[in-house]
Amino acid sequence: MTLLKSWVASANGPKHPFPLNNLPYGVFSTDTFDPRCGVAIGDMILDMRRAEEAGLVSLTDDALFDVPFWNEVMEEGPELWAALRKRITQILAEGSPDRERAEPLLVPQAEAEMHLPFLVAEFTDFYAGKHHAVNVGTMFRGAENALPPNWLHIPIGYNGRASSVVVSGSDVRRPWGQLKSPDHDKPAFLPSRRFDLELEMGAIVGTASDGPVTVDEAFEMIFGYVLLNDWSARDIQAWEYQPLGPFQAKATATSISPWIVTAAALEPFRCDTPEREVDLLDHLKDTGPMLYDIDLAVSLAPEGKPATEIARTNYREIYYSSAQQLAHHSTSGCPMTPGDLLGSGTISGPTKPERGSLLELSWGGKEPLTLESGESRTFLEDGDTLTLWGAAHGEGYTIGFGECTGTILPALDNPYER
Image (cartoon, rainbow, N blue to C red; front, side, top):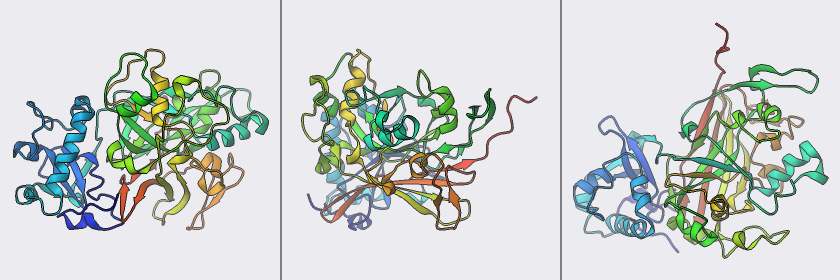
C-alpha cells in the first residue's frame, strides 16, 4: 500500500505519523471543548462529536460520540469498525465532497490536551519477550535455568491494575515498598531504589467473549494497539514476587500513548512470530502472521538535560502475539471485556542496544549507561523523563502512535510517619 492523499496537507508527508492510512483514535479537550473523541489526521484532530452532530458520521441509530471514550465504538464490533474507518477516509481524502463541512471541525493538535482514549476495564501484563525473559532469567537464575519450564509452552502473565493506567504525559511518583538487601536479615520500608521502565505494546480488546476463543477469533477481537510503559520497581519485585509473582512492584503506574492505532491501519505490516523452539499445543498454534513490524525506541532525559536514545527494537521480537495471549487468557472461561488491555511484556532484541529495560541495559546495575549529558544511569532517578516511540513504515508513509512519556517525581514523605 502507498500513501493515501488527504486534503489536510500536513498528513501527506512521508514521515508524518498520522497520514490518511493511519487515522488513530483518541480523546482530547481544549480551552473551548470538553473531552471528546477525535481522529488524528496530520497535525489536526477531527472532532467526532461535532462530526456526528453535523450528520457527517451516522452509522447507528444511537449516538456513538456523545461520550469521551471509544468503548461505545468497540462494543459495536468489527463490521462497524470497518464502516467507520471507511467513512472517515471518505471525509478526509483528497478531493472529498465533504471537505467544506468537515474543515471547521478540525482542531490543531497543538491546542489539545490528550486523555485516556478508552475506559480500561482490566489490565493484564504478559512476559512474552523471549530475549527479555532470557536476560532476566540469566541474571537471577543463571543461563542454564533462564527460562521457566512453562515459558516455551504458554504466554506467562499476571493480572495488573486497571486503575493505575495513565495517559502519556502523566507524572509518575516513585513508590514506597518493602525492600530487602541480601546482606540484611529483615526488610525495610523505603522508596524504590531500582525503579525501571518496560518498553511494551498494549493490545485493546474490542469485543466481549464468554468462554474460550481460538487464536483466529482472538485476532478479530482486537480493536487496536498503543505504546505501553509498565513502570517497575525491581527491588520491591525481587522481595515480593516469590511465589505468586509481581504485585506492588507493578502497581504504581502503566503509561500508554494517547492514540489507538487500529488493527486495520496495521494490516499491511503483519509478520510472523519468531521461530518456535517447541511445538505449541493446538489451541495456541500460529495460524498466520499475527505480529506486526513496528520499530520501537525509548529515550531518557535527565531533568533539564537533553534526551539520549537508550534502546531501539521491534515489536516482531515478541514470542507470543497478542492474539495468542488473548486466546490463552480465555482458556479458563475467563470472560474478556471491551476495554481490556493486554501488555505484551518487555520487548527486547538479541543485542544490547535492543534491550527494553534498564534492568537489562545495565545488567542489574553492574554496567551503568552513559548518557549524552555525561551522566550515568543504572536505574531511573527523580526528574528523569522517559519517552517511547513506535512507527511502522510503508511505501512513502509512516504509521505512528504518538509519544508515550512520563516523568519521575520524588517519593512522598513516609506516609506512615504521623
